[in-house]
Amino acid sequence: MEGLILNKIPENVQSIHLIAVCGTGMGALACMLKDLGYEITGSDQKVYPPMSEFLKRKGISLFSGYSSANIAHRPDLVVVGNAVSKDNPEVQALETLQLPFCSMPQAINHFIAAGKKPIVITGTHGKTTTASLMAWILQTAGLDPTFFIGGILKNFDSNYRLGQGEYIVLEGDEYDTAFFDKGAKFLHYHPYAAVLTSIEFDHADIFNDIQHIKRTFDRFLDGIAAQRLLMALDADAHIDELIRHRNCYTQRYGFNPHSDWSIGEVFLEPPWTRFEVFKAQQLMGVFRSHMIGKHNLSNALADIAIADSLGIPASIISQALESFQGIKRRQEVRGQKRGVTVIDDFAHHPTAVAATIKAVKPFYPDGRLIAVFEPRTNTSMRDVFQSVYVRSFAAADLICVRHPPMLEKIPPDQRFSSKQLVADLQQSGKTAHYFVDTDGIIDFLQKTARSGDVVLIMSNGGFDNIHHRLLDVL
Image 1 (cartoon, one colour):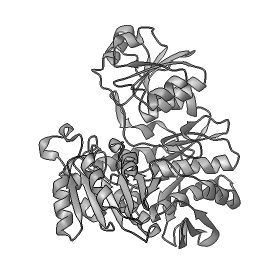
Image 2 (cartoon, rainbow, N blue to C red):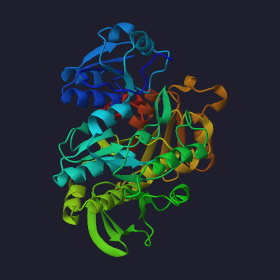
Image 3 (cartoon, helix red, strand yellow):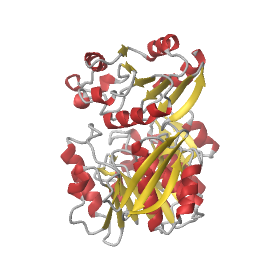
Image 4 (cartoon, one colour):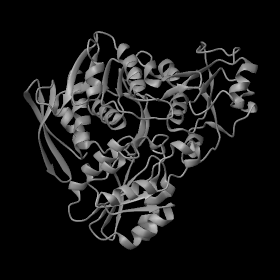
């Protein structure tokens, strides 16, 4: 690959091709570039709805499958997604044609974030929610933000926006950038303000251990300029260690009353959560939100603190919190049949699974919480959290665990066992069941779920459309 024109975006770009365009982030970037007036083409291994239809409606030409012919028109620039390797036929054609190329975050920096003030949300958990609410606060304040986020914001029905205002909200992903850049995506961003929500071991396919992850976040923190604000969670020992002796202006937030920003009393008033916010130990205000769970209050607090630093009044922040509709696939109620509520959530890491179950349960006190879990991430399909997951389901009344759908991707000696998890849950006194496939879960729930129950379905994938199929049969 020595002949490739690496990391150089030429002047006067007019046409751009994106390899692996149907991913959430790459698809959003393609749309933003199209809206900016560039001629856009894209390719992916499988071009399928809904992303394919969305891109076509935008006027973006799509190629199904990878081929050197897809870039025979010699675009001015090629954006290479991190889902492809150096063996990809289009990547190999880059060298032959000597076409300039870059990664997705490089393209965001050059075409989208240039001249704006980036608010970068990072951390193992809560990035999407925190970034989404931050964008909505800015919009409510009339600041017309740009954003690029890994989930669909219901208030905008989109995961991206091109605004005319000075701020851009970026979800800072610690996952690697591209085959030619194994550093984290967030290392490309230069924060005007940043949030660090948590640091835990995750992404076992690219990180060796927690120390490897901490080194990556350490590099990100090193890149925050001295006069810029870092809002860091106050209840994470890894964060405590990493923020020492930083040049940036650091504030802490969380439930510790001695922190710069803290949450006081919390009142559960379904469908609302009402909570006190203290700034420097002085009551700043009392806010309401439809978001549930301690973790979401913490996410909201980080946004309140950032918004306050930007001069946004508490009354506007309160208005934004109350009108925030949430994100698709984050505690999203998909429907109710026969008195059974079906909720979709993205949770897959053991900490997120535990937090989501604890958050949902108090809001549905009249029935059982039935937790349905599909391990399908590169981490959850590995045995690194085999024993930890048992504690994650402690607050659930009934647990259904599916066999991992793509387990063959994982080396045999590293594979997670859903059957073992169920056995361990049963040994701990929980009512848990193992299922080979999704059909078995739907059949079981059709017979078992009763009025008042909430079925909390947790997976980072489509889970064979289990949500609609379950609602159809109830």
